[in-house]
Amino acid sequence: MKKLFASLAVLAAVATGVVVSTAAEIESGLSAGQRVPAFYVHDVTGPQKGEDLCYRCRFGNQPVVSIFTKDVDENVAKLTKALDGVVSANRDAKMAGFLVLTSDSPSSAEAKLSEVATKHSIKQIPLTTFEGAAGPKSYKLNPQAEVTVMMWVEGKVKVNKGFAAKDLTEETIAAISKDASKILE
Image (cartoon, rainbow, N blue to C red; front, side, top):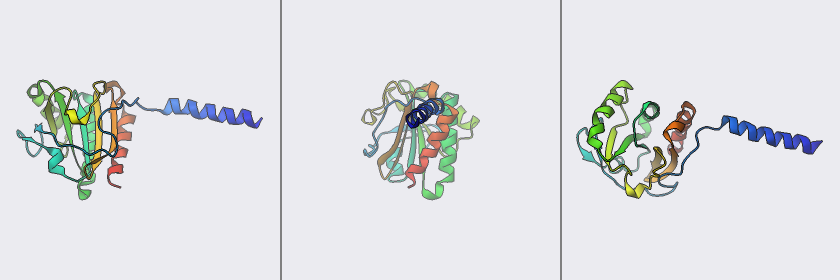
């Protein structure tokens, strides 16, 4: 009888896990513990609007939230807005962030990025572009991951999550926002 209850408990736990699980993650980007290399972006909406710069370099050892994406759809905008709120709430800890749209024609996306920043009132996370759909080679972004979120502190990755765009749900966004606390520990 004990074995039956134990088996049912395991089955219930597995079933619950399936029901509660959020998006399927895709391995993409640098692994936890790896050093974050420098790369240049074109700032579209941030304080250095219109300039090419290295936000990785500018933020140095600060806790940083970065979003690499192939498109800025409504779900990516919601993710960015949520993380913008996290960055804003943790300015005293010098948390920073930026979004990188990877594209073979980045200048054609600038108007859309400006629109998204205005529509969603994104203030703390600059929206930037990177020339090349694959993103910075040294970041090892998986082509299957339409969105990769990497968080680091002191130049080392602490959190890394990759997703297909369809898997970026409200639950996933909430979980990613919660993960940002890991770079403040």
